[in-house]
Length: 128
Image (cartoon, rainbow, N blue to C red; front, top):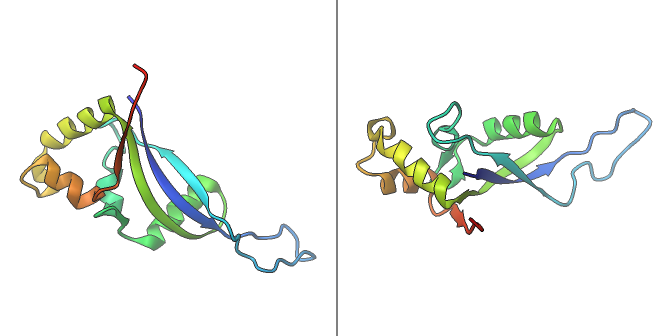
């Protein structure tokens, strides 16, 4: 079972000494950050509910702080790209959501997935 969140992150370069100056101080390229998605039903699995809304980051300042913690670098911006999962993870995610629809204030699993992830879920083919 495999799941991961994918973010696009723009980092800010900061010199280690005052004798160095950067122009510009923001990297022109973005990096793709892959963060493991906890197994559904385990601690942290509700990250999508607590952080995303319709496939977008709900609170960008909070997301920047999270990305800075993950990268240990200053972050200018962060955007959510997708939740990549294999079929087993996706089935487990839907089961865990179905077990507690009231927590999501939704009538069914599809509503929850749409409400928090929009169309930003990609089920990957596996060799299993």
